[in-house]
Length: 100
Image 1: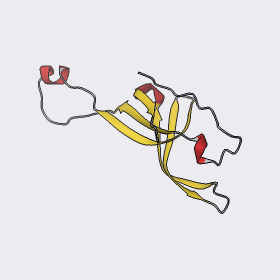
Image 2 (image 1 turned 30 degrees about the vertical axis):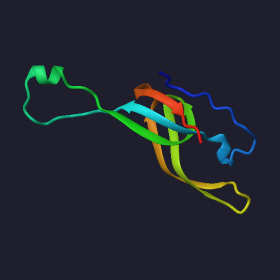
Image 3 (image 1 turned 90 degrees about the horizontal axis):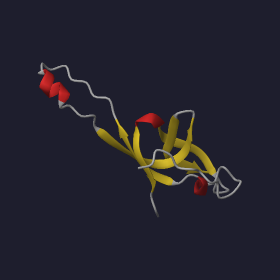
Image 4 (image 1 turned 45 degrees about the horizontal axis):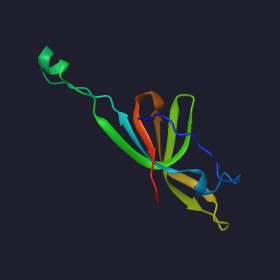
């Protein structure tokens, strides 16, 4: 399983959506429980695996950044992005490119 994807920019226009591949990221989340439980129940606890899908913006300095939405300008370039998520790369279980 991969934790990183090497970004190869298809063209020099960084405002082109082609430079930001769609990815699916599986990552481990933190879980807490305030209920009474035995040590055995705690020993059997597992971290939940979460899934995030979006356009991969970057993976550097231990942080993976994705965005889900974007607007375009009159030249068909990315104007703004929205629905962003940042994930510590260390908790990523797997990351893969999604095909169109």
